[in-house]
Structures are given as C-alpha cells and as structure tokens.
Image 1 (cartoon, one colour):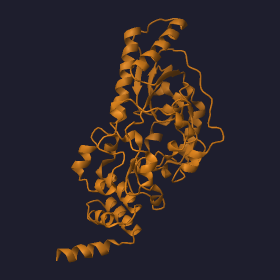
Image 2: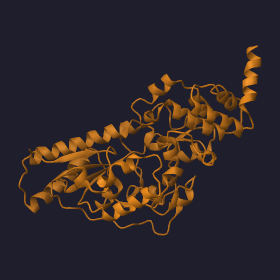
Image 3: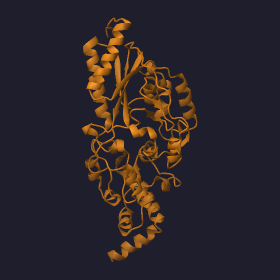
Image 4: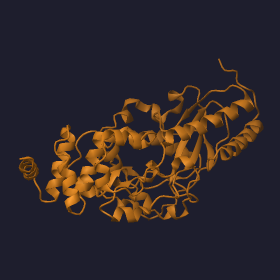
Length: 371
C-alpha cells in the first residue's frame, strides 16, 4: 500500500516545475499537466464508434468508457502528465519526392527508425522514477499508446497544443511530427493552461487526404484512412481505395505534409528514430523480392514488424499496381502469383490487371518456359 506524501499546494507547484525540467533533461521537448475533463470527448468518441468509423479496430470499443475516464482505467488518477517527443528524422529523403516517384515506396516517417513504444516508455519510466525519488512512493502508470487513453485530448488539455482538423495534435512551435506519452498519477499537481485552436479556416489537410478519410473537420473515417488500411486492416483492401493509395505501403503522412504549422517542426535528435535499412526511399521491386527472413530481420525492432510479411506483400502489391508499367514490375508481380496466401495472390492479380495483364497469361508463359 502506497503512503501518500503530504504536500501543500505550493509544494505541488514546485514539484510540477521540477517534473517539466526533468522531462527536458530526459530528452522530451515538452511536458505538461492536465486534470482530465473528458465528458465532451467521450460523447464524440461514442458517436464515432456508433458510426463504425473505427472499422476492425475493435479495441477502440472493447474497453467501454475507460478510455475517456482515466480514474476508471487507473483507480486513483487525479492528474495526467503528458510528454511530447519529436520524431522527424533529419536523414530521411524528402517525402514529397518519394511520393512523386512511383517506383519508390513511401513509409510514414514515424516508422523509419526503431519502434517508438520502447523509447518513449523507457523515457517516461525514468521520469516517474525521478518523481518517486523526490516525493517517495506514489500511485502512477505509464502509457505509450499501450492502453485505452485519449492521448491527444489529454495533451490538448495540458496545453501541449490543440487538436487539428486531421485529428492530430498541433503545436505552434513544433507542428505535429511528434509522439505523445502519459503518466497517470494520483498526485494533485496543478494543471497547465490550454492553448487555443489556431487552424482557423484552413482545410489543407482535408483536401490533401488521398482517400478523403477526413470526412469533416476533426472527424476521420478510419476505414478510408491509408494508415488504417496498410497497418490495422488484416484482410483485403477495398477495390475502390487501392488506386488512391499510390506508393504508400505503411502509413500516410499527407495531412501532415501540407499543414502550414509543420513549417515550425523540429528535426529529432533521437538516434532511435534515424532511418534504418534505407526505408526512407526504397525501391518497390527490391522490397517485393524480400523473403520472410529478410522482412523479419530488417524490420526487427521497428513498428513495421507488427503487420507481418503477408500484409507487407499485400501493401507492396498495391503500390506495384499503381507504379509505371515495366518489365521489372511485371516480373516481380508474376513471381508472387503462387505465393501461399490467398490475400497476397488476390492483390497481385489486381496489380497485374492494372497493367493490362492477366494471371493466366503469366501462368501460361511460365509453363512454356518450363517446357
């Protein structure tokens, strides 16, 4: 049983300032505190779920209202410490240039390095340890996108930014290229002031979405979102959305790329987020030639690892279907026709059809070659 330390309001105010300073020492760009008030956010969440906008992300509904009631998720929670960590890698190829080159694969910039969960969680735990060294045992729990939390809403209430029309958190000083993490705690820390919304009349993110997944300001239909389609969706990608995905094989950054506030974005100094294995502008044909051992080895410790090799091939097949026709593209697709996965075979067949080719033509061609 934890023994709470008795502190005055002044003491908690001083502790709050220390927590922010410790956070900066640990590499966070900003740390702020909120007293969660999520009733309105809960109403919006329940409405979003009722329309089925979460698709196959059943975990969004499975925890009920714990997502919007921190004290039910972690009993005793009084305040939430939110932290922001920039992730934009300085050594990555220009995103717009990669997207414009149909022979290349685009991977969301957050996934180019090591999986952020471990880095962020470790950093938050160190912050919690520092707090405990200062005040003694206290109730807390660390979260890094690992439980049903409303991290954008909590960070917004803490004053780290405001929710943009694309639903991501925006900061005037740092744009949106950052990760968020939280410490739920029973310490009655004073909350920080919120920021006002500075999106104004801008709708660039809405217009830029390749699949028009942002169906209204602040509302995303995940079932149309390329990040959902390439990462969360386990089965077949809807036919009408495949041509709109272009060469995006893991995630999508278009709404962030056009946001004026990202002119203020800072490059990350974190070594863990640096580009690994040339995934900032890889060749589609070369990626499609990887075997499963290659995939597992080159995505080890990466967020990409979680989708598995089958969905990796599915996503690349769509990108190859959207690529310029060439002998190399057609040959690469034909070599996956008999891959032992109906999901992959279906998307390869679609990709070949995009180039005016049929599976039968390639099967007959291979048979003649064998004979």
